[in-house]
Length: 199
Image (cartoon, rainbow, N blue to C red):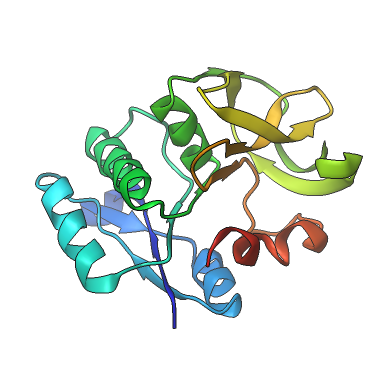
């Protein structure tokens, strides 16, 4: 079975005084039900480049998912790990899907910027995809793309013309602002998403 490596968010559990890496089980189920083996990456606080390289050589993944959760810059070591994932993927032409925060990080890597915007934290809203097809997707983000990164091109737009999806012109990198692992999506947009991106 082909492996997809997935990054995780960082949460503090106050009543246990613990910092935890965590991931929505819905994403695990989505990846598994699409025919892949999901393996999660820890947020190493140091030696992230060395450790990632070791895991990559052992596992030989067919792709990466940069998951949602946390704001950019909130946890420096998570940002650095995911930057290393992008660098490794450029070197080996490995596909990446960035979900919400993951999309924002890909944009930042290619010198794009984001800004805060109201009205995007709702259960569902409509976006326009290729061939002007309209989809309903969930929406949980406080930030939107202000400046699109170099060689990125929009694939999906919200009705207010903010970018809800993009792809890279050269590398197999894709970003979406909705969460395919959560409720509130038109299933037509999610059913073949992973298979269209990963080998």
